[in-house]
Image (tube, rainbow over all chains, first blue to last red; front, side):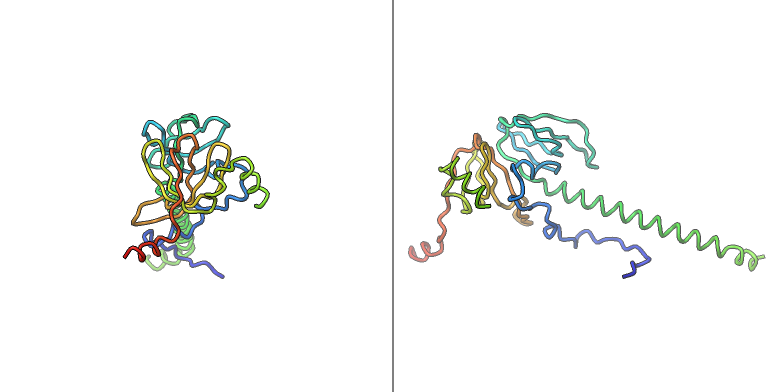
Length: 135
Length: 87
């Protein structure tokens, strides 16, 4: 199968994120449930009513390390939360979606750049003939 | 799977009846979540629910700490039959 030479701009509304299996993996393979939430974007509900949103780095026996995140999903600061203060944890669907979107955008830009390069080379090869014609 | 299940049941007999059944969970904050109970550990358990908005439901797992839970109730399975009887 040959790839199409011209990159297409993905239609983000039509992508079905539900079909991707990020939000739901089989629990049978993991030793502890926390492993399933490790290294993913999470919403953590605390006892005092706060909600912490970020990237769950690592899990310790009594605490959890999360990185708080800005709009471009870059970690601003790291926080340690004790498991005693946590009520519940769930995956952050919006941030995961955004991560997929950014990945697709990056690959799209790469493809566009590659196409531009290809065009440049094409022009360079053709240019002597063209210049002669112009003269 | 069978081995892990038996372990869970030995350690936490109170949760045995709720496994793979639709439950209503009430937490300390007063929030209520409905889902299917999937997995139990020493200090926490996981349910299978909708983790996104009502308009755009996404199925996923949600973890609850046992010390933050007020109650677990099982929903009646055949609600439709009861409703029809009542009518």
